[in-house]
Amino acid sequence: MTRRARRNHSGAFKAKVALAALRGEKTLAELAQQFDVHPNQITTWRAQLLDGAAEVFGGGAGAAPAAVDVKELHAKIGQLTLENDFLSGALGKAGMTSAKR
Image 1 (cartoon, rainbow, N blue to C red):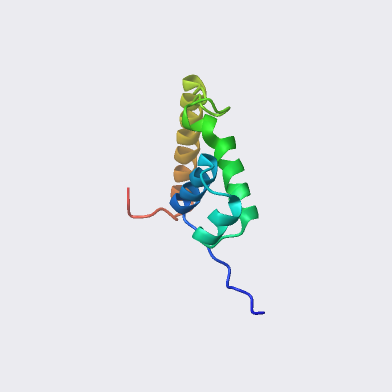
Image 2 (tube, rainbow, N blue to C red):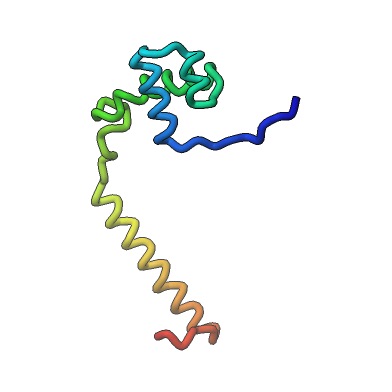
């Protein structure tokens, strides 16, 4: 028996198959034959759909954006500006400045 090349299914196809499995109108064996995938794969996709369903409606753990500390960002900008100015001056003294400035 020859092995079939590994196939990559799109997210839309996986969702279609998983939703068909959730409807329960056909058995896993029937769905596997219809969509030409293994029944275990359908079970996996169905479980992934159910696990990720809460994130669709904003109930996931990462739903809230991370808080941004503006003072910390301004301090970092100031530090980087100071370093750039210092390095620019050091390069100028070494005679290695570019023609940009």
